[in-house]
Structures are given as structure tokens and as C-alpha cells.
Image 1 (tube, rainbow, N blue to C red):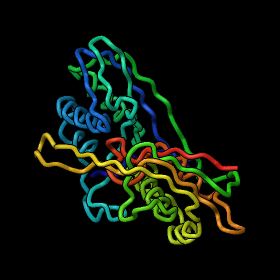
Image 2: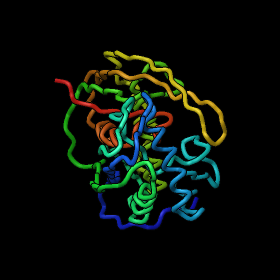
Image 3: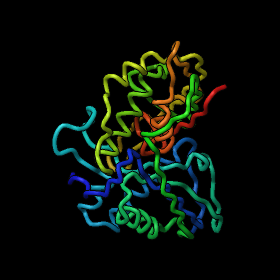
Length: 279
């Protein structure tokens, strides 16, 4: 995978992305199986991109490959996008009806956005009506609000292997590594942070409340015919800072995680989280 093009650096430490919302009109009846809307769209995007993009561009976007040791132990780099389409799970869209979904693009260069829209423009199942573009920038430096307790909601099935429970040290490690890796591959570079020290402080944060539901589901690859589990847990977890500690330094990672997702198979819409401060 080629290195990203140099980008201007104004001195701020940020994680940048684009939220792209695509609006469609169905050309025929469309059905999104329960829990699989994101995976359905990912598969459609891959097939469409093969038709509209040159082979190197298709590989860069949809099948990135590591040229050496993968970051954070990954065999291959994460894809530069995720789908947000949980509202379509289990829905049937009648011919002529309108629907939408979001894609979060972590490569913010204009050519990637154009490639994404161009692929869905040739989708025979639906017609693109409009595209809304929202630049997003999460600050990792400067003044941060104080927080002693936060509640994280796992909106779509989430896997944080090897953990069974979403202990904060595990959740934070996955968020930290994902954000830094995406920034290194598709942005100005990895976060300049002390990974070990942050991890040690995250280990002092207690899992004070945990209410989870496990979901088991599978997908079948149309290319290989293989079946893959795509389940995980949903629900909520509350985290409490230790005595004389504060959670403020972790909040930017939680904010970024609301856009990137966390854990396995985020490209299909898994691992969607949101969070709020607790009084």
C-alpha cells in the first residue's frame, strides 16, 4: 500500500474524517436482513467499485494489503471507511421509496470521496438522489472537560477480543490503536503519544456497570462461499475513574470511536458506539 500524500499540518493534533450521507430512490424492492445492512452495503460497494475504479485504486480502497508487518499486529491495514446503516436492518424498501445510509471516510482526499460516490452511482438497485458531506475533526490537544464517570453504549454488535467483558483498558487500547493506525495510514501520521503510559492509566479505570446482550449471526461470502460469524454484544457499560483520577484524557478517543467504530469487522458497521458523561 503506498504511503499517503503529504498534507498540511497547522500544528493541531486532530483526527479528521468525512461523514458522507447518500440518499437513494429504490429501483425495485430492496431487503436488508436483520443485523446485516452494513455487510450488504459493503458487499455491494466492493462489486460496484470493481466496475468503476482502476485495479490499483480498488485495491487501495477495498482490499488494502500490508507491505511489511501490519500495524498493531494487523495482517492488513484497516479499510479507510465504515458504513452506518443500522436503521436499515430488517427493512424492506419498496420500489420508488427513498432511503439513506452514512459512510465515514477516513481518507479525506477528494479522489476517494469521488470514487465512493461514483461506485454507488452505477448501482442498479437504487438511484443516487443526493450526497451530503460533513467534515469532522476531533481535537486531541488543548483544554478538555473533566469527567469522573462515562457511559458507553454499544449500538451495534461489538467484539473486543480476547476480552469477554468490555474492561476499559481493553476498550481504550482498541480505540487508541485504531485511531492512531487510521491516522498513520490515511492522515498526517500516527498519534505522538506514550502508548504504555496511557495504557497503564486506562487500567486504573473501573468497569462500574455492565449490561450486555450477545447476538449470534453469520454471513456467507459470495466470493468464497465461506461462512463467517459477525455477532457480538450490544448494551451499555459505565466506567469510573479511580480516586484522584480523571477521564478527560480518554474522551477524545471515545469521540473518535463514535466515528471509527471499535473492535472486529467495523467496516460492516459493527462496533458502533456512543458515549455520554455521567453526573
